[in-house]
Length: 132
Image 1: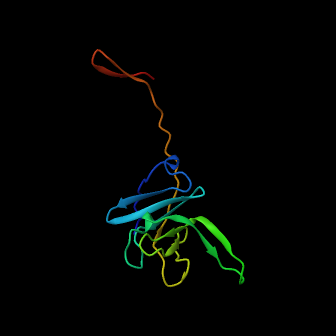
Image 2: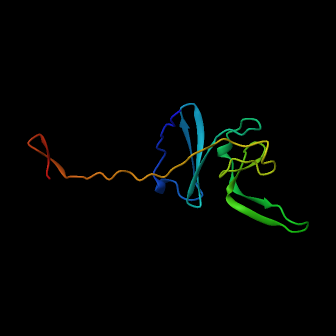
């Protein structure tokens, strides 16, 4: 089956650390700019169906030896607004249990807009005129 193309926004309209929630058909999808790289995930928490992409974005504590506390993955961790389950927006994986629960991710591509050559247009005596 051929994938449908959906234009979301211009790159400059979604700066690093920001998100945009869009409705594509019957799907609600969150598009995130993580340090200049774009990612998209389904806007539904697999736990109890909350609008996942409305939750806070930050980092999380990383595994390490006893007594050592390391914080990381800043800007990649999305917390469910209902129960604060954490998901990595770059992979869709749940941070605590990556194997059993994950959020559907979607391919995001940054494409260049085709260059459109523009010409000045004026109205003269009720006629639209283009000068080349």
